[in-house]
Amino acid sequence: MKVQAKNAESFARQPPPEIRAILVYGPDHGLVRERVGSLVRSVVPDLNDPFRVVELSGTQVQKDPAVVADEAASLAFGGGRRAVLVRDADDGTTKAFGQFLDDPAGDGLVIAAAGDLAAKSRLRQTFEKAKLGAALPCYRDDARSLPGLIEETLRGEGLRVSREARDYLATHLGGDRLVTRSELNKLAIYVGDGEVTLADAQACVGDTAELTLEDIAFAAGAGDTGEIERAYQRAIREGAHPVQPLRATARHFQRLHAVAGRNDLDQAMTELRPPVFWKRKQAFKAQAQAWTAAPLARALQRLLDAESRVKTTGMPAATIASRTLMEVAHRSPLRKRRASARR
Image (cartoon, rainbow, N blue to C red; front, side, top):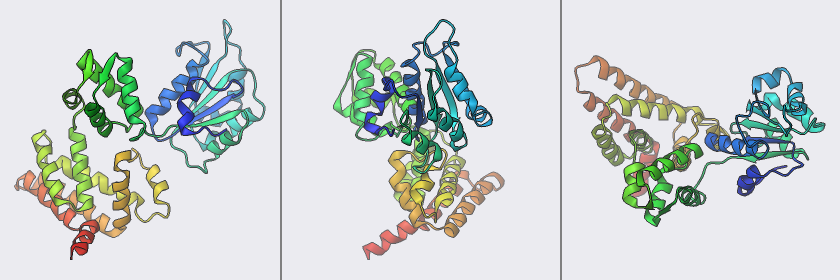
């Protein structure tokens, strides 16, 4: 059974009684954990009940495929259904789940927690095609789902949220469900009661130094020298050492180099760890399509050499870093395309 993303939330809270095994997968690891918790609670109220909740690793299951059926068929001390949770499931565990779904033992609910899986994944296909199994996707919150999640979470804390604050939060959250909820809970404690205003949201969930460094890296890849200058100065004001923007940009170019030239760029991007933040995907893809391997390698070497010069020469670190970032940006294919289009 293939569960549609729009139905995933309600499915996780109350899965159909005939479903015996559920695969929870996707790029949002926080959401995977959240929905796994909901599925376990649908069977066992106390997640820490040692008699009714058993956890297995993907390695255990791969070595001993029969362990899934054995645990699902075991009787719990004191009665009640058991929840059998298998963490870090992948294609190597397909045999165990396939055997169980062909002939489910006992009445335990089996839950497999996995990362992002391609449509052709053997594990995912096994659950999607099974009559007694289900595959539950966990995609990152986007512009459509985030406003509702923000309002729902803050309402649960007894708070209202202004439209301006909600829109601001929607542009600064969403990469990981648990991180989003954590930030909203922190905001709720900060506000206390009443309405969350834009000022409250900005004070509690503002731009971090890490995001500023990422702005620099993406600006370098896009050839946006104006944004580099603005973001670089902001990073320094926030206390960043000049080496940090160089390292952040080098990491970005390493990730671009890892996917550039791949036939299925979308698939290659899903394999990156950590995954590309959903708000950055379009920009990342455009850069990966524009840059080729050789120029990326040269840009990366230039960044690494600059870090070495910062540590070994007497030149001011800030001068070396800013100059190198500008040099890399000037060589961006996207900058050259924009210049040609203006002629």
